[in-house]
Image (cartoon, rainbow, N blue to C red):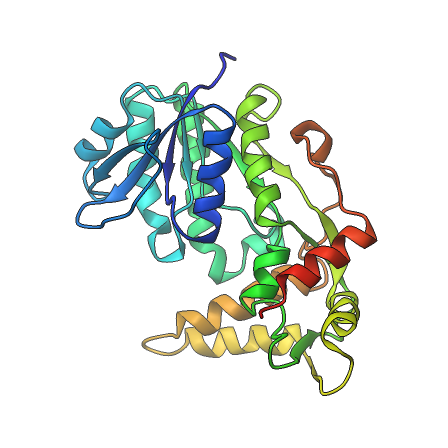
Length: 300
């Protein structure tokens, strides 16, 4: 497969988007960032910026002309905008489409069946169909939750207030990756287009349980004053079922209970069994390096 040089990034802001952009630029790719019309963001001078209407095929086709790859980092509310983006990629002869994954193992049947992942699975099916009918190829990049952001943003644990929920006791491990390693994985995929063609790649910096994460945190902020609450993955999924029966379900409740199941539930593939770290140039962290990431990620 021919090398990839020109890359479009949809969703180049925020913690992950900014990290992806930095890694793509520093790796020497010619990067075009897609922004929504009417928004204003500042990007490096060596990045091309194109304002698009994600609901207009013509607008997207115009933006993707001459590009080799499209990387989507669109957030959950905009996941379905990728359908037109895939169609535009096919029409313009884009070689590789990387949809917005960067998380749990959505190829695991139990995870794929969770309602909170429906849009991601629908996009997977759409890009697979497009690849079967055209010259487009795809890669799903699966990373597990972001270890550093998960601590700093309070997603995995509220270190500032010393509170943590331990699904099913907190002893199951899940694969986790730092934001920087997600950026490295993206560059690795684009540099190895043939080896990563039409498949998922799995990467992790480490596999860790919440109990292990808590032990690291207690060394950083102290062991006293923690509120540890054991929760049930199954009970969380019952919440999802009850929410879906409502006329206007709370999407936030569905997403968080489904995320917890995908990360920490039995049989949901939270801990990846086969890794592509070597291919993509990502070295797993030692225990000391994990401790360092944890310490640096605690909110000040």
